[in-house]
Length: 358
Image (cartoon, rainbow, N blue to C red; front, side, top):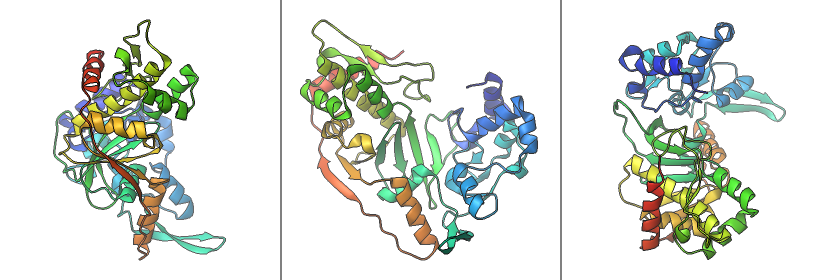
């Protein structure tokens, strides 16, 4: 939950603590959580031995030590993206003792060996899940869209720069570069809700969407059932269908739902200011041919779906291999390149979709 006083402290402390960390304020990040605890449960922080990210806490059960990597550190809202270090202003604004923060080490560094039943196994620092997925996919430029329960839109090769009010996130990758990310909370989760309401399976949803005409007979669906982080929509926005009429069919509702998520993706891509070029599509939500074609059409870019199971786990294996001197090459099953089409009905649907905002 948001806390107005916590928000103010993080955004105003130190002449603008959020300027160097290059993130919109998101309550679920480590910094805001610590700020909330410092205000409402200070005794918990007083008893804390360290602040650890999930993978770092797991690693600490194998190899003692409070260590993280730059990709996870940069996602805390406590990391100075421009100067590469813990932000003194943000840490002070969160009210956390700097000594609780972990040391930041290279993602491929071997930090010890774990005694497991099969013998001692070297343990590397590792990285955060999203940059590991980028590493596994091999995306170095353009845009990668991971379409799952939520949606991450990633622009590798981003260069950090101070921005007073960032609308997209700036993260360190799992190697030595950076990427920008626009995120949507409502992706496959919105489709799952639609399936429940319409009594459709996932395959049935996409089959019905393929049967309806582009533009869904004038019906519009905004997928923001649980609100959004900002940029495309805000925390108080909600989802739903609009433009219903007596001739609306269940297929129109399904088509509008699929188009609505695709149009939200297109709005998020605009925030990233990505140069023209193809899109790498990953995640289970991108397997459907109708989704791939819709994304190509609304983005005006070729789309290629990369079938890469458990991409973050594959990226972790790549890092582990590099840390121990092994060359791990992911098996990437790339689908066909789906070219964009000029679909006037979709352009009109996009105008209607934008018109339902607010």
